[in-house]
Image (tube, rainbow, N blue to C red; front, side):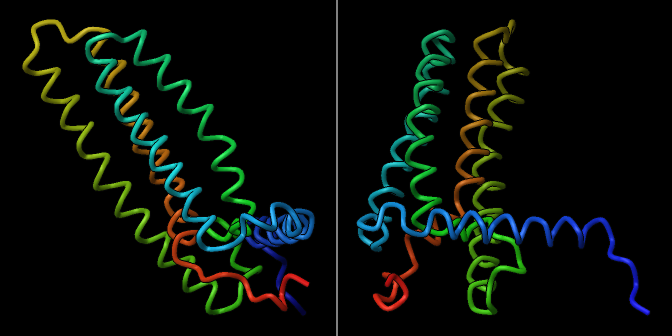
Length: 180
């Protein structure tokens, strides 16, 4: 007699089926962007967008409205870059365990581990900024809140995108036989 599947196991199976279906649908999208060089260009584009998000956080400390507008524009600019990188990288950064072989799983887990370290490391900066700003300023107010929120969100975006960015940067070109 087999044990009934847990909620987590059913979720993982559903997620794997959905991932494989999505991969089958998108595997022919953007064939010219699937090379390592093109994926690296997408990663560099995201790095520039994330840098502009960080800059928006600094600007928001002095001009909250301008910082928020710049941050929103950077968020919009990140969407097509991020979506394209996800597609050409086969969404390996957040793929379910059941859809990967041992090597792919090890690579994904290394990228996720590094992404967690990146997230923790860079998010400390706005955390201290918010703490020290709230302690040292007489009236921290809206500018500090807007600036800190933008910086924290930018750090979380960087951390969330990092696994796919790492895999997109490091994975070699696909085997020509696999794309036929």
